[in-house]
Structures are given as structure tokens and as C-alpha cells.
Image (cartoon, rainbow, N blue to C red):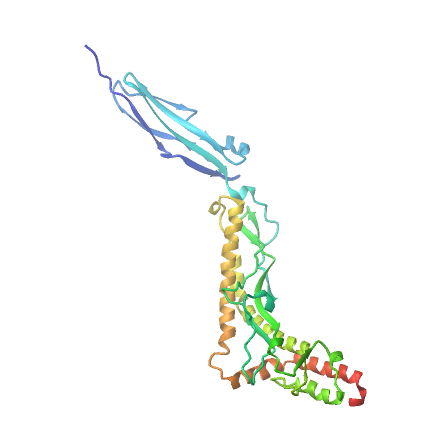
Length: 342
């Protein structure tokens, strides 16, 4: 006669699968493993053994971790009916913030720089097209989303252990704009020059009238007259300053969102991931700022007729002191070269 002994079963229930535990200087838990077995009563209840132990004191491993430490854990149930086993692995890693540099200063919102792109920076000519009798000799506009309005984000991540938060430092970020001259739009006979010394005419006193014509908008030289590049440039930079006002208007909202973005240590598994996610999030904040400012800037011109736009250019842009003062300076320089015209 023979006896049939019930074979044992065993299963690890905590943790029930392979698991990874992230440790930090402030978080080094003791892991208590648990199992379920059968039979659960009677003379055939199996003996349970663990290898290495059902208790893992992670503090004992913390200083040994380079990349990670993998601890295989095996449980064995044994009785007269046989042996059963189950196993898992517990992987210990340091949290990303423990390898991050310590924050030594407050994370201040970045300075925004309007970075000028020239005609050659675009795949197609960004200059306004001439529509006679209008010949735009310069252009300014925000760069479109497809053209890439935001420059590279040079971000440094650090960890503030007092608040248990990631912080990000971004010194400056470029918002790109198109600002350049469009000499190809000049009507026949009009010459664009860098300065008054390049104006060569038989009657220099007549050229003074060309210079005085720069005081109005649109600039209206004689048919074979001169247009001064510095005046075209300063005109477009007034447009840039107006756009800067819309950027500045939204900067307080951007700054607040920048300061509020401070993820907890556990949100990233590596310093590299913290940097990449920080760049992605901060870029999205910049795109919101750029989008709102650009929409508001462009909406100034919604519904404007050609005549309305001319009035805007003359009264809002060309009449500004930096434009008019430069014109006066250049007239003065020319008269110094030709005192007979005073």
C-alpha cells in the first residue's frame, strides 16, 4: 500500500512580478516579500525557504548602485509530496534626482531675444511682393510656425532637495523674426546706398530734396533718386519694437508658468530624461507666448485698406523719433560734405 502525498504549490504575491524600485537619499525602504502556498493546513503544510531572504534592506545596497543592482529572489515550498518554487527579480536603481546637480540659485525665467533672420535664411523669398505703385524696400514679420519661430533651448536641470523638486535654468531663448531689406523691389532708377558719401550727383543740392523725401512715408525719391539703407533699416526696427511690446505683454504669464513648472523627483528616471522633458515643456510655453504675440501683432492690420496701412506706416512707424532723428543726422552729414547747399 502507498500513500499519495499532496504536492505543494507556492507563488510570490508581493511583489507579484519582476519589479524596479527607485531609491533616493531620502527613500531607501525595506522590502518585505510575501508568498502564498498550499496546502495551508494539516500535516502536509510545506516548509517555506527564501533565497536570499524575504526581507530586502535597500539601504545596504544604495552606495553600491552604479547603474542598477538586480536581486534574484527565489521561494521554495517543500513537503513529502515534492518541491515547488517561484522566483522574481527586484531591480534597485537610484532616482534621477540623486545624480542631478544641486540647485545653487533660483531658477529665473529666461531672457527673450528677438533674433533677426535675413532673406538667405529662408527657403523662399520672405520679402513683401511689390504692387506698383507700392515698392516695399524692407520687411518685418514674425516667423511662422513652419519656419521655426523658436531657437534652440539651452537648458540645465538641477534638483532642489529642500523642496524635492526639479528646477530648470534657461539663460536666453530666441524668438525669430524676419527683418531685412528688399533691394530687388526697388523701382527702376532708384539706387539704395549705405550712406550719404555714396550719393554722387551733378547737382548735390537737388539730392538734399531726396533726403528730405525720406521724412515722409512712403519714401518718395525722384525717378532716379537715392534711398538710404540706414533709414530703411531703422524703419523696420520700429516694427520690431512694436512686436517686442506684444511679447513683453505676455511675458508675465510666461514667467509665472515657467516658475510653476517644477516636477517631483519621481517624475523622471534619469537626468537626461529630465532635461529632454524640461526642454519640451518650456518650448511649449514659448510657442504659446509667440503664438499669442504674433496673432495680436498681425491682427492690427485686419481689415486695413491699402490707404489705412499707409497711414499706419507713416504715423505709427515712420514718425518715431529714432527714424526722424536719423534722417536729420544724415541730412546734416550730407550738408557737411556739400556746404554750398545750406
